[in-house]
Image 1 (cartoon, rainbow, N blue to C red):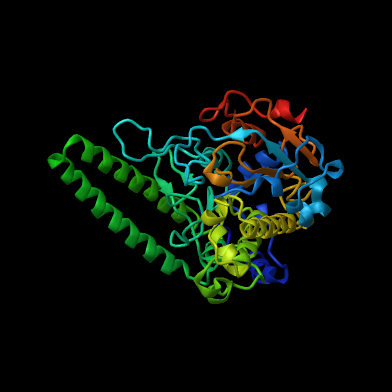
Image 2: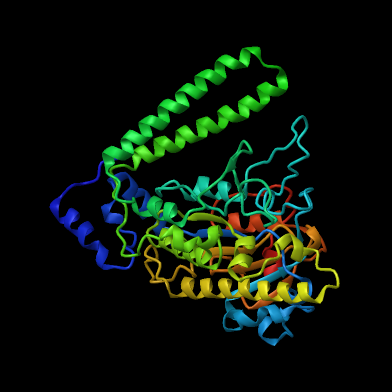
Length: 444
């Protein structure tokens, strides 16, 4: 891709830092991408999708209302206190279950795949493609990154996540993502690295993967069938990374967007070695920055539940809180935790509603054109039934927010919701994973 190097465009990019975050500017893209983008906008602004998983769920009496109906008119549990100003912009859905998840301590590993990770014949542990990657294949063709994976450290134990990711490639291998806010910032805005340095890094990565693929091909001749399967998964992942490198090369001549957002200081954001409230808020700002600049349209965030507790000076882990029993002190800690999560969720809704969508010719906001899920794959005591499910954003077709809704059956597949989000985003997907319907009937 070759970007026009006219002085006027260069000057415009240099001066673009006057904005908080330079919005998407289609005229700065190469002609081929301009045509593609104009075609997309002719059918309406693109949809943005975000899945946020917190690992373990909430204590029932703090989170789930007993009745369905308008949230403003229900007797809401005490965990809802911080979000009352945004009730009309959120939806709670009950009765979604991830019945395929057979790992009761690990809710996030299968939350977006709806797969039984220990049920693949001949494989000790395996996964399938996650719904965000299905979306990325359709929505990420014209953006710098097909998708963006945000993470919390694997060492931040007790989160209830499991595995290393919530995003998985078509071959079932994980996309581990970024746990450093600074690294995410540099991916979005370039990190003051020259084109020559990027090219050098990409060439080095290519050389390493060439060697690894050659060695794996040579090794296949002396392996038994099981080990050959494992190696084939490995080489498939290498080929996927090679495609990523090629994509990065194609975007080398497209300037990174400018911003006056200061680069996060990881030593301050990740205080005491944990990902806590400040890190979560920083990651949320980076998600908005990615959408404002149309750097990506698909994001997943494996949130740091244990780190949040540490930042609240709570020494118990989410795993401990999940086994609450009749311990009144654990009940109180659970309530504090739920209120904090709802506060963070409500503040993010505020930001979505106040951020103009630069891709919307009608002047809409990011809220208007997004589909956001906030929840997790487990309820308390490691149950995979009636998992927490909060939705926000105006991208859901036929959904009027401000309601507590019940899926028609007690254990309605969670994949029904993922199918709905994929369809509403325009991917053309008919069914995902073990879905047996969509959620559109619930919205009526």
